[in-house]
Image (tube, rainbow, N blue to C red; front, side, top):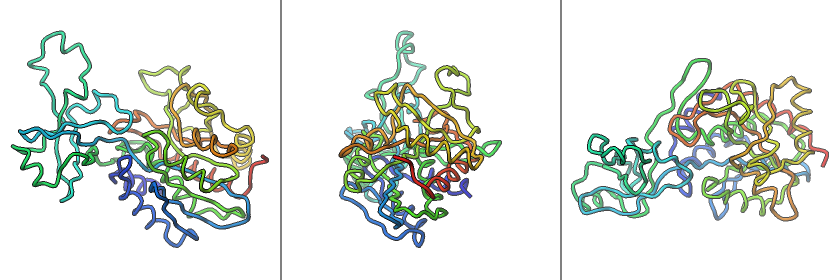
Length: 345
């Protein structure tokens, strides 16, 4: 079931640039279901199912946003930088896992208590430079003894749990959701074409892994499986996002108001026709913000026709993202059916 797979993926730790744990898990999942694995110099994992000369790339980034140790003070507190797009208040008072060379060390993100803030300080957003990680150490030497140094990666310590109505909340659902879709699709699909399932790295740092892998593969077309923001909860207006959780996967026609991606018309028609032919619920999105691996893939070499296939996810870039597992199952169905044919490019 996709639910158990997604929970396992969410609980893995794989910050941008340090995705090895996720890579190992994916390889184990797909062993015996693909014809070839390869890992490129950046760390992208490419799973190949061989067919004819028509090459389809399906990209899903496996990295999550996180932190990295920048400085260790004399009293044993860790200062850090963010890796990926965090909303600063989301981090304050979170529990974290520090990935030292001797194993995981747990800590908490601290800052100045509100009880001792003056009225003006309380009005201001807390800054990253005002936060620190407390691992219980009393000195820099103690920290070093735990295997922690400058450059040690840090992730949020949070486990996925089930909510009502077949929904899940957890960290890193952006984009372990896309990873789960791709794993399931590669296991189930029988395609006459050559499929490149690419689990990309460093998407959250600028779509870096996808650019490298697309250049190497030079596919005829590409799909990026990812998440997108729904407009179905308090605090966001329907005019800003027409996407609704539980209404099926989303074909993203435009990202970042066109500054990112204008999806290929041929790719859009291919997925829409497939969905309609198989009664697969689906939604269309014209987005004003956010990008996926498709944004960079479509600019590689002579241009690669591309489209994102996304899943609605509430509260993205937080430790408590929420998705509907039914949407993911329908996304897998759409991928499996579409990959039996090819777009009319």
